[in-house]
Amino acid sequence: MILDPILDVFRGKAVTIPPLDGAFRPNTRLDDAPPFAELTEPDNLLLAAGRLLVSSGNAVLAIAAGAEPVAVETFQSPVTALALSPSGELTVGLQSGKLLIGGKEVSLPAELSCITALAYADDGALWLANGSAQHLPSQWAADLMKKGASGSLWRCGPGGIGFQRIAGDIAFPYGLHPVGADVLVSESWRHQLLRFDGSNGNRSTVLTHLPGYPARLSPASDGGAWLTLFAPRNRLIEFVLQETHYRQDMIDQVPPAYWIAPALASNRSFLEPLQCGGIRTMGIHKPWSPSRSYGLVVKLDPSLQPQFSLHSRANGTRHGICSVAERDGRLFVASKGGDCVLALDTGGF
Image (cartoon, rainbow, N blue to C red; front, side):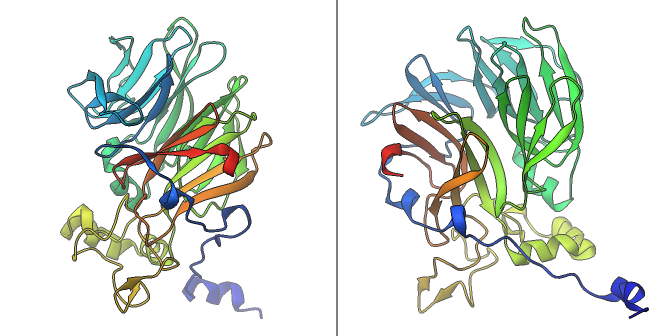
């Protein structure tokens, strides 16, 4: 009809999310995996000199099977990103906005205050993701609820010649994976994986319409990559993101832990949203029910297309996966919401 374009202004928008199907078909592999180590909110995983390092709060710990985690370094601020330089120097990003390479603080541009990911390219260049210009890394939920898109991508050439801004207008970049002179970036709030040209900052979309909020990337032994998704999308959260006044009232009046927003873990308080109706029936939490938290790791082939995925479903406990690392046929998975690091045999996938 002729009036349809005019009437569309007054019609509501359909709230849809991508289905968990194909390579994203649900399973229980993460919940079935044995814990490799138990510690509080493990975040970044890193392989360094034969050791498996993990960040937890203000510390970087070395973990091994059957042994207590051993502190390698502690800092005055929570650790938000880890990387290992080609010369073996531990590179650490802190919530305070500081960057340390080999224990020495590096001078950064004033705009860099939300370091979410670090990665070295083959030529020794250091890539840095700045998640937001307004919020700290721990305030990621506020950045999403305010529809933030102030993230940026930075590069420091070999030899530490200083950081150069490569691209901006990124909705919370959370993961980096260098590919030659380019870099892959996971853009959390737009649910997609981007590729940036290292010379001019031009971007292209590699994967889009992901069923969750992508976090960090890590290399796979076959030339592909592992992608983590730290929380799922669901219709209620997508609806709230469309309702400006409701969302602002929620931000102003409700504690962040109880927002209708993604979470790293859930079912820890009776004050949380999404607990009744189709979530729990006769005391049983449905594995297919909508959830604020979830556990999801996706294997990407060398052409960066999804091959398969590993899940901890709505009724599971290994949620909030922010980082993985592959070594000698084993995949180590950090469950920030489940307070543990898992070890899975890649030959069983």
